[in-house]
Amino acid sequence: MTRAQCAAVFARGTAVHSPHFLVRFSYTEELHSRLAVVVPKRVEKSAVLRHLLKRRVRNVLARISSDISQARDIVVISKQGAQKLPFEKIEQELMKIFGGRGQ
Image (cartoon, rainbow, N blue to C red; front, side, top):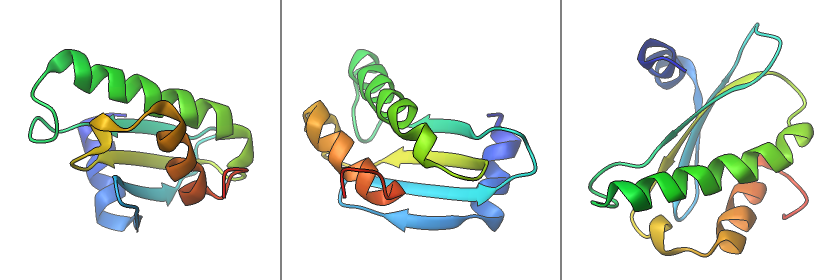
């Protein structure tokens, strides 16, 4: 997603909070969902660890993408502490947000 598309999600989208993630989404006319994952430097200084967290979040969302019924623009923003979570906890938290099988 481009910066402008992310800004549009923030302007008209819905926010869902969890202890370690903020997810903003809005429905779109596109044929498929689009995703942006943001890990701020204030959460993790190391670029390597920021990218690791982004890969983990994308992996979880790829697994549950079939559970997302309608095309959406999705922005996932990590909060402090998310970088220390094991993969299973990230998966549980995001599945709870998206109503997947982890709820």
